[in-house]
Length: 191
Ligand SMILES: NC(=O)CC[C@H](N)C(=O)O
Image (cartoon, rainbow, N blue to C red):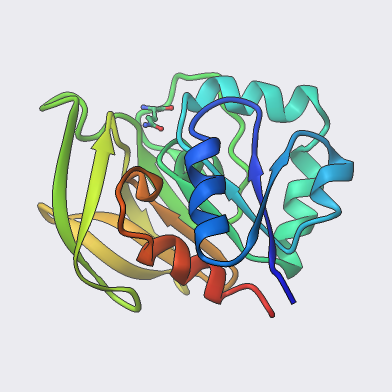
């Protein structure tokens, strides 16, 4: 059966995720409402601007539905989506209500102060070696709680992790031709 994979489509990098999902044999679906969410078996929260996405999640009444969804279905937060899936923001101050799906504390724009955007090859546990990864004003994970597994680091910073159904990464897996990271997420969705 074709896996229906939602991409939260309120703001940010939506279409590139949908085309990778489709290339991998799934059906990518833009999720804008709780009714859309009810149709999918996994959800990607994409990169973009985390405070804007946070505000929109609350406006369209998706905050609790996403939390419920994540109890039984895989969720993948990329870049701004990682910030939203986390449980706290170390550098604080911003009006952002994280979804608390994975026990990580995050620094926003962690690499952004040094250089805005860069590409590196990462060795990612469970996924593969030398995976091209694009970082754009990317956050990093400062600390992980018990039960969170680190999958990749860059310059000693945690940039990819998972806890049960919930996967997060600092970079944009949809922006290269390599689809192994999104393929890994799709393997977590029951067939
Ligand atoms: N590429 C991205 O998603 C950037 C995230 C952005 N810096 C934020 O904090 O929301």
